[in-house]
Image (cartoon, rainbow, N blue to C red; front, side):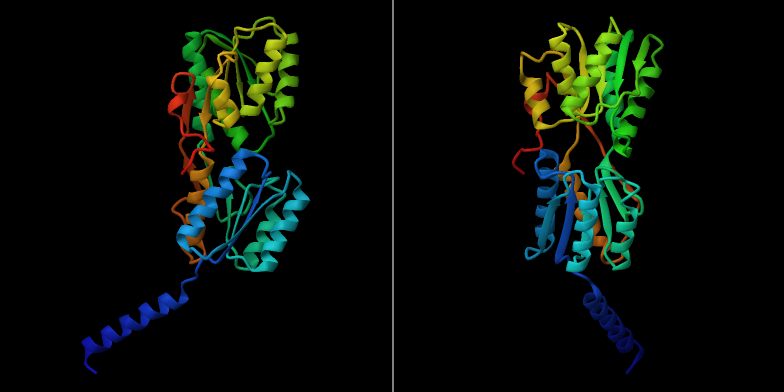
Length: 312
């Protein structure tokens, strides 16, 4: 066998070996906050569509852990026992979920976190939450002409929330005419929580020109509290671009809700699944965290907004 023939034979053998060694995405397990939340429904759909694009015969199991950490642990352990190739998760607790992630990895299963970073995950795909906070609060600064009293309504201390508040503070603090009245009250990420926190702020502060909330449910609760208190001149901005805020931005009876820095959970999950499919074959992403840009949805452009529930 001459040198050229030997080289070609070796190349062919390597190609066959590589093809035989490649792993298919045949089973994927997904653990998300709640399948009653449209954000997580869109995440699950995006992951499923991308997985079926990669392998039409893939088995996808998407479950809600209903904000119960122990339930998420059980789901991850069940995924491991079932021999899935990939796990996607939105962590109930970014730090506490670490040992469960380590168990999956010990079984040879890559784990990709979506929306919120999780300790030990092989990769994370999330909205650029710092930027989301920046654009939502820049809107406030512009509307107030750089002068006014503003409340930052905080939330559960996960990475996404911390980043949104940091982005907002960066913008507000760059404007000497803006006074931040409060930035440490937790609206619990919920409508009731946002309403309760806002009721306290309305009692405490005679003048509030604007409020930034860390997500849409808190914004809707904030709006309700202001309406009930007869305060109708407050600018409210937020983050998510959820169906409820999309409706509020179109509603003439909710004029105080001005803008939401949108997320795209469908696209987020598609990218996470694509990264995961490469991870099972040992191909790591260039960066451990992939940030997706946010776009500000306002009362002026909401009719052009392609929301979470839009057909894809």
